[in-house]
Image (tube, rainbow, N blue to C red; front, top):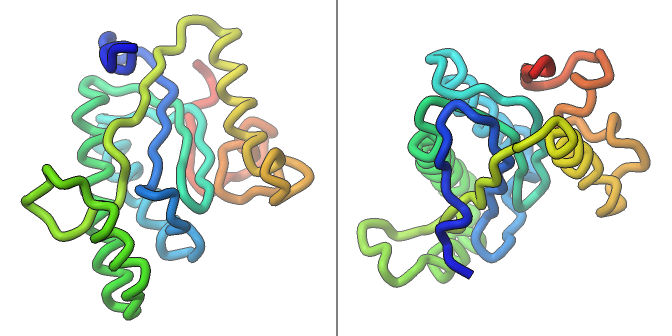
Length: 177
């Protein structure tokens, strides 16, 4: 199958995206690393470059439904910013094993850096109906339940499930789409 299927063609349309850490390494295990994701999304949101409708962050990947005027570029900015912050954080903590794994996982053609944090691409899938939107939201929110981390999606702090239940979440999402 061609990689062209997974491209952003309609800017300002919502897309379901998946961003995965190389080698499925567990990066999001500390509050500081989750906050790096929220800080980046918030920076893009404040500049009206990203609208987040739904998300879940697990230890080695995240799903989000988002839109933006140049979504592919802004997801690239998000991944670049968080990668740099994650590497600096791990370096400050002396996390040599994880940094060595990022060095090992780095694609050979990435000669401009020592490490690679994110896998290439984000598998964007355009949301084409309300039914598809709900399916992707429920899939995301149920990810921690499927992994047996929690019994109820509302118990996973790093998702928008609480926002859709009328409760305060850790990151503001647009629930009226």
